[in-house]
Image: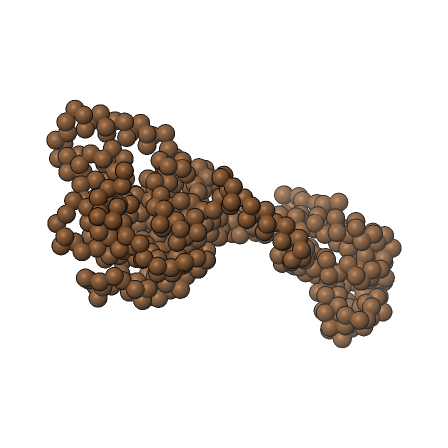
Length: 446
């Protein structure tokens, strides 16, 4: 029977189930391999049971052809001087008295795992409570620690992931391929640019860590915002946008000019005709129907980035997140060199894609040496970790000296872990601050 007395602080446990599992192993050694995919020694509440399970695992790994029974188990414990910790010979002999079948033992194992997770949750909660009362602790760091610990605990299942027969996996693989060939099959989150989507095998995928790099004034934010708007308007994706450089209202003004196609300078200086104002209102109505979530705190701490991303995912189930941009994110530890800070930030964002199971698109500056030429992967500023961590790197280049309404922009997919690399060309519409596909003569596509 599981026990938990909050007043006496007895943690959740089930001693009878633990004894039953150990006894079942002694009667049928073959189940230990399956039990080890569910349980670790630490999952047992009693220290003696932890030692018994660890010894059984060690013996099984070292002597796979030999059977472990009460005699061999006691011998192993004697050699380790842990027999007394485990209750001695009388206690070990009693383990098989009420041992269940192997099937029931697996049921008990899952019970023990859940009780172990409860104990870990109590530990996490107690630690957070202590940190919350400690006024020397930074509260943002404490909250991030809590979210991270809870997220890690929630994702825990078996000790090790299942391994699968290729025969079974082939069925799932074929089903996935068939879905992609159907009209409603998911191939990725489309960027709204056909040529770019082809390079990306359909768009950004879940858990993709995407970097968009360019020199200042080339249009990193405009490019990211264009993709975000395409995703909202064309596909009704749920989009999150963390803007560390630009106010949310300024970001929305750019979004509205792109949707309405009203000259951005007219919006900025308030010189709108009645027709333009009507187009803006129509764009507002269109955008208001979409699931677009913006956070515009400048120079956010890395902990805050994770917290906001988790909140957007938890409360609004966002499907993709944009971060503008990595160079403005403040690392938790500012005592280390900046390139090490950026490396830590990049690794953390990469891990966040897996935790939230969404693509995260992060903007980054490239070095000054790329002025006047298309950047390379090695030109990403401040840390080589960005290049290493990224699944996809997209680099932008444009000749800003060209005084044309639509400026040719080179878009290089410089890294694509699961698809093609290569260059495409898009047009940057200066008046509506938006990237679009264009015809060969760089006039807008109809």
